[in-house]
Image 1: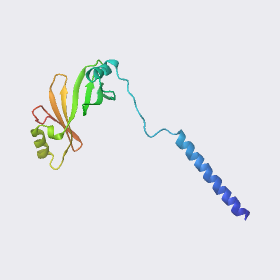
Image 2 (image 1 turned 180 degrees about the vertical axis):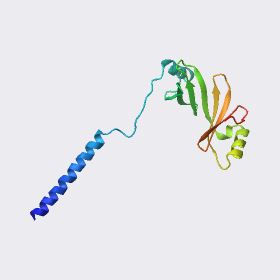
Image 3 (image 1 turned 60 degrees about the horizontal axis):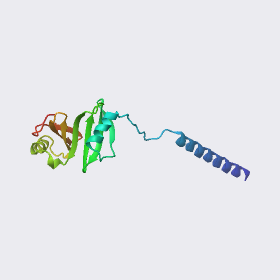
Image 4 (image 1 turned 90 degrees about the vertical axis):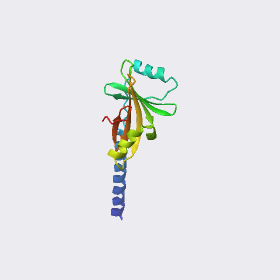
Length: 151
């Protein structure tokens, strides 16, 4: 009888020690999600505030030494690439695939048969040059203003 009682006590104590050890490991471990913040120059932030004064929620990322501001304006998702001095390098506006030039849709049908355009955007650079982007099969295809394939 004592053997059974002692065995039960050993099992209970072992389970308790394991539970406490696991709790300490979880509490003292590094979180699975890490949030990174970046320092965005004041001139860069000021450009977004000047162009879109009503927008409050801007998501910032680094892009090739510049800063990308992701925001929603008038119901459209926008992405602006801005340098540290506050100069807009390009603006990318999400559009419906149906708003792409017909030649873009024809190119996708011909060269990527069976695949659909998952996302589309109109991109305007600092000089006003317009290009289009179509996401197909996990790749971004770029087209000129007339809808001719570039890359």
